[in-house]
Image (cartoon, rainbow, N blue to C red; front, top):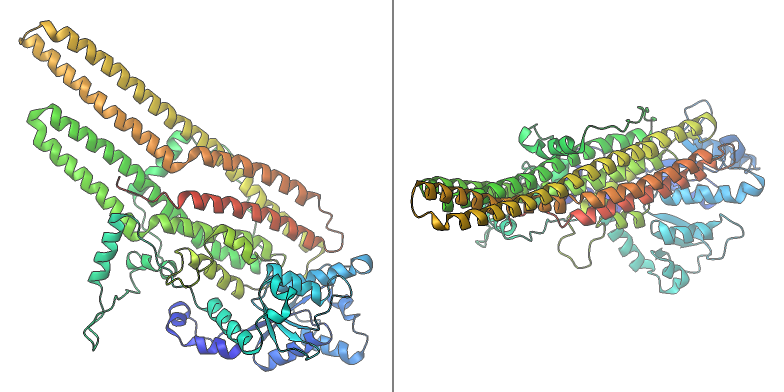
Length: 604
């Protein structure tokens, strides 16, 4: 692993992502330091330059009682360092007696949740009790990272286990050189980002992509051919072709009132916020602070790109309605025909410019991707306080994390899963004992920052979405009724003008008929704009999602408050509750992303 990581260090893909890092790749081993293979692997890892992270099932002094031999206990203390130094390990609040086996199982699962590869020195036999090697290996095969299985009896070559099926039929699992090849591929996929490209589906998008690629070419090679060239400094334009590069080079967008249309309309129609905001809660130092620092820029970017995307489609509906009005005026009033037609062309060009800008800068895709990343960081920040992490199955439900086999490019959001995994790999583990006042403080932080904050957010979103949705429905209905009234009035005037000849009165009636007809022609476009805005915003669905999440948060808050923190492994019970509500929240945001992926800004 060390040699493979170092060989990747100098590659172009690695330099593009890790260019600012001056250190060699950091390799870490996480171990409970049990007697036997745990200690042996830890010693070898330290000799090879790995860092050592330690997770204990009990408090340090209690766990040391497992090692009755003086030399074994001395070795254990040597790994951890002196008692007087700040804790460099994580100790769970496990218990003895009936809770002992569960405590060993908990620390084994914690190791699985926080590693990219599980090294298992195992004879292949069932566990003698709960929490044995066999249990942890099966847990990893089902939920966690692949397993590098070293046969403790030396009767079989090393195996690379990726699925429960590999465990059921170990003879069919990759072995020896095949296992080593798969391990090397796994390390590459972990360390190197997927080659993502945004797929252009619209005619405007494909045209812009072709023009951009044609204009950016490398100098001719010796064979006379040229190659596309990317600009590493063009985060706002060319960087959109490589979503990860664009995010890493992202800069906060300048404030522009033009892109506040959606927010202004949402607040004006939805009303002022009446739901109270949660009290400010300090973020605990350590892993939660680490994830908070990653959450904030992703949240800011998502909010900014979301405002630009949503304001863009609002402007398009406004401009399209005005273009219809200009076309009607050009037909209805000959003296202003040229001016009205010119305005119509300018409005259509403005729509084209908005669509082209959105296509080129990918505000729609960045909005969704950054929101997914922000929500992953938010949930992981809650779990990390207790030593847990989101397993790959939860990521794949929320985003396109997998790269299709034989695909030239990964899906455009594959970078989110990769980047989150890289951040997870670099994240610190909590240190010290998870019990007493510290555990109570963590519960309070999670209750406010995760549960209560989301409760209040969804209460506000449900209320405002309902108001705005109803207003748009009523506005569309009023526009339809007004059209009906205008057409009836026009019909009456047409009938009344039949016997008035060609005098001044007839001319006035004709002008009034033209005016009513023009308004009757424009109002359906206004009504259609309201329908289109509702279709893009999906306000009714957002209202329903928020109503569901309010119920989920209410139930989760009650369960978290009811936990007895004095019980052994209460930290793991709390983590399980946080994991369950985080999974519900990720399922919700995954459904939101699926809905809005197909709602890119379009010209027609």
